[in-house]
Length: 305
Image (cartoon, rainbow, N blue to C red; front, side, top):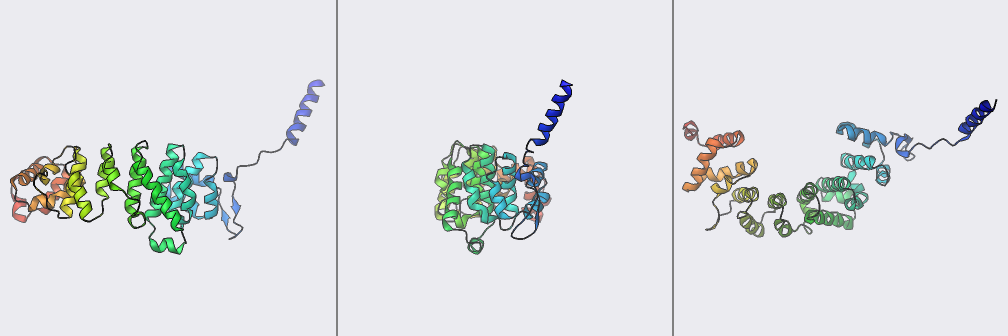
């Protein structure tokens, strides 16, 4: 009898106990402004974790921007990461730029990286007309550009995150011109950062002087990238600078940089450049050999390498 009574009491207590409230991110809702059905935010997380960007874009498109902005403050880390990935996929994602910026300073490294990538994409895909149309405050754009600049220059930050910041500044060159400081990046001890700075230098005499300095870099990747830009900009190399042929053969030179140097080697008369071209025809990667073949005159194509 006593055991039966205990079981009965426990059953009553279970019925009276409050039912835990479902997390907001797990619930669907009706948008009070549009009257449209909005899926649970958890759908964003699931799509992001599957790597299904098409579904992520569809799910995000059914969620009001204000709800996406609010979700950035959710305690669910995976949800926040998904929302950051989704924001550039919705129109107009640029209206959420101000809400994304605080996460660039997050303690979570993955969160910082995702926030930097989102900021870079939003700025890089929005021109002056977009910023004006959606009334993005100038102060917000300036803060975003400065956040990218600070991240790019931060030697304690991961290289991947810094490269995202550099790329973002380059793609938003018009908006971020005032915050881009190539001298700081070119002085970085990290070769990947120096190379990224070389690739994002704008056209102009001052940038050409920096390219000439970078062509003397001790790292072959950086020097070859500088050589590629000097060739494409038809900058005359002064005496004492390594010839383009040597830069094309530099250890670690990226194939795309070597390919950009090839037109200058094909047109060059200097023996060192011609020797470098012949060596690349013999032992260069297939992509480089094919590029040389396409650049050579018909008679030269039929000659043995």
